[in-house]
Image 1 (cartoon, protein in one colour):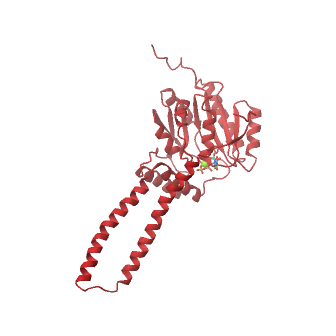
Image 2: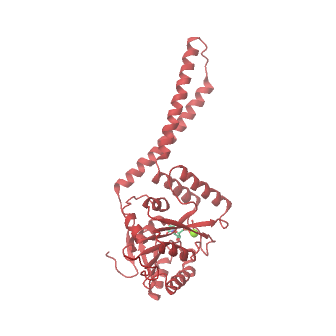
Length: 328
Ligand code: UDP
Ligand code: MG
C-alpha cells in the first residue's frame, strides 16, 4: 500500500484547551487572538474546519465564566466547560483534554494569559504532521521572568532530572498531544497530577518546539511562591521515590559512622578516658532529632499520597458546558 502524502491526509481536527481561573481582565484580550490563530490555521489548510477553542473555567470567582459563555454564543469556534470548583491548573488542563479526546485528532494546551507564543502552534502542527504524537513547547529564553524565578525554575528542572523524573527542560504546560497519545494517557489514573512529568511516560514519538515566553498581557500570576514550592515538591514525590532512597542511603552511612563511634567509645571506656562529653552529646541529639523527624516527614509525604490515591476521588467534576449538555 502506498502511504498517503501529506496533502492527501485528512486535515486534523484541533482543539486548543485553555485553563482559566479569575481571568476576566486578560480573557477579552487573548480570546480573539486565539480565534484569529485558529482561523488562520484553518485557512492555511493545516487543520479541519470543525477545530475548536475550549476554555476550561476552573471555578473562577470573577466574571470569567460569563465571558466564556458570551464568547461561545458569539462564535461557534469557542466552547467552554466549567469545573464545579477551583481545582488548580493541572486538573483544569486534564479536564479539558479528557473532555475532547474522543472528539478531535489533536489538542494543544496553552495558558490563557498570552505568555505562550501562539505562533509556535504552526511548528507544533508540522511536527504532528511528521508523525509526532506529543510536541513540547519549550521556552528558549526566560528574559521576562525575574532572576529569582528563572534561577529557581532552572535549578528545579535539574533537581527533577537528578531525582529520576523525566521532564523536558523549560517546558511547562504548552504542548500538543494527539488523540492517540491521550487515549493512552487516560489510563494514567493518578490523582496527584504533574502533567509535564507524566506525558514523557506515555512514550510515542515526540519533539520540542522553541518559543519566547512573554509577559502576561493583563491580570496577575496565580502562582505565588508557596504554590510554586508545593507544585515543585509534588512533582518530585508524585513521580519519584528517590527521596526515600536517599534517606536509606543516609541511614546506612550514619550506621557505618556509628559503628566507628561505638568502637571508639568502648575503647575509651576500657582505658578509663571517659569524660563528661556534654557538648558532643547535645550536638548528636539535635542532629539526629532533626534528621529523624525530617526523614519521617518525607516518608509521611508518600504515605499521605498513597492514602489520597487509594481514595481515587474524581480528578475533575464538570458542572456546566456552553453547549448546554450537562450529562456526559
Ligand atoms: N489557572 C487555573 N487554575 C488555577 C490557577 C491558574 O486554571 O488555580 C490557569 C490560569 O488561568 C492560566 C494558567 O493556569 O491560564 C497559568 O497560570 P498563571 O498565568 O497564573 O501562572 P504563571 O504563568 O505565572 O506560572
Ligand atoms: Mg502565566
